[in-house]
View 1 (cartoon, rainbow, N blue to C red):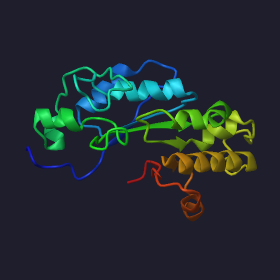
View 2 (cartoon, rainbow, N blue to C red):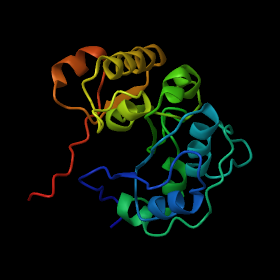
View 3 (cartoon, helix red, strand yellow):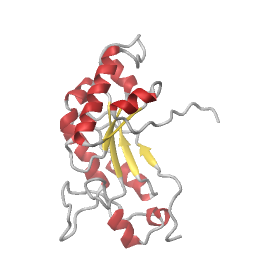
View 4 (cartoon, helix red, strand yellow):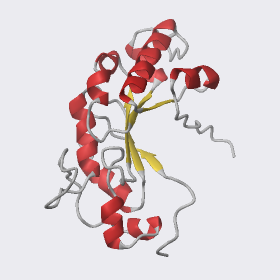
Length: 202
């Protein structure tokens, strides 16, 4: 009902890589009430900007934050009801934060390759991107330090992770990781988002 707010904040990782076309899927998840989207395997600022564009509605006359220009289709589906808002209020608040301080959508990308690490400052400079998440398993394979499987604690992975953390702090961006074996160390580095891995157990 209008006025009720969800008790959880649903953030969805979509099964498409940054270089692929996923505009339709982003819209579908947003239309059922998702409040954030994570795109894996993003390597460039252009790929990060594509996520922001896919999550935003086209700007209207007099818009305070017209860029990047949104490409999201109009119909919000069940999202206004899930958010507990009127349709107009939903349109006003269904925008990316922190670009729009009143926006309530999070655009997050995963960095999982040497190319992404090399481009991290450019990626974090994309307007509307809330932050990045390190994917240490794929990152370890990209760096060639697998055993031969993922090697999350390899020194090269640690160095790359620290590089991302420093960049996030410098850009005042959210920094997350799926490596949770040493949360205290990650907190000291500036990490703030720790998705709990699904194990299949209740």
